[in-house]
Amino acid sequence: MRLIDWVPDGDIKLRPRTLGRADAKRLISSKCLFAQKFDLTVVDDILGELELHLTAGSKIKTKVRANLV
Figure (cartoon, rainbow, N blue to C red):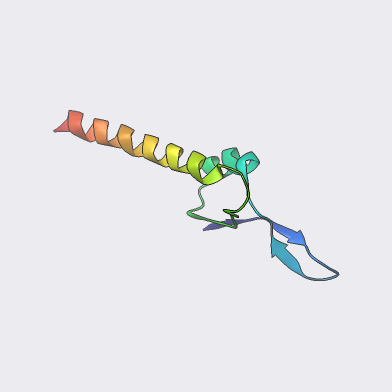
């Protein structure tokens, strides 16, 4: 599953909107495994925020596994 926000670009065409920090909550709460599209040249730390969320989740899972062993 992918999270793509299509926006108008011309009369008929659509293009994916560039996702930013304002989209973090939507991305984190989504069940989508992939998102499109990010622009690394824009001063926006969306990827860092998503990485923090993902690594925080993995640390919790690691602690739970350690307690089960």
